[in-house]
Amino acid sequence: MEQLEQLAMDFIDAKKSEEKAREIRVGIENKILELTGCKEDGAETHNIGEYKIVTKGALRYSCNIEDLDNVEIEGSLKPIKTERKFDLKGFKWLKENDTEVYEKIASVVKITKAKPSVTIQKKG
Image 1 (tube, one colour):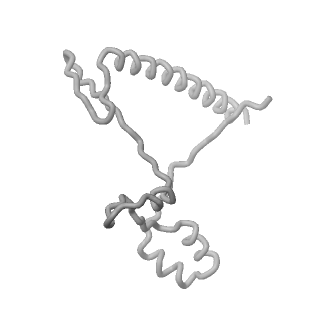
Image 2 (cartoon, one colour; image 1 turned 90 degrees about the horizontal axis):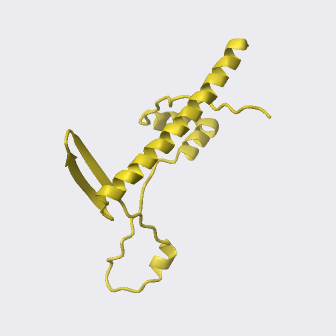
Image 3 (cartoon, rainbow, N blue to C red; image 1 turned 120 degrees about the vertical axis):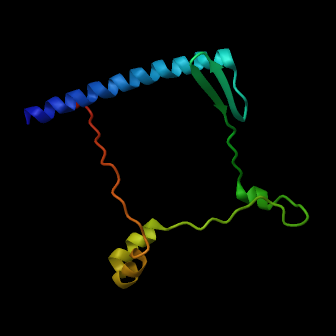
């Protein structure tokens, strides 16, 4: 158990080092952006000596679909997309409740193992 406790301590120390490195990196990014500027939406390349620095700005868009439905326009030009997606919750339900249907669907579903994760918190 002593080895596991040491690994837990090492894990927490490594996380702290990552957080500190992230803070430093973000600070450097901000200084670079002060010097280069940044497009509001798009990328810009700066060739500086041996380095190629690319800055990217992005705008995020969101819309309440119900509000968009209430906008009156002629024709069918509203930018609305209907998306078909795999229903994982339904697939898992079938596994428990209808194995025959589950097996048929499972034949076309690719299942890969995700990377395991470890969370460690110091008690107290």
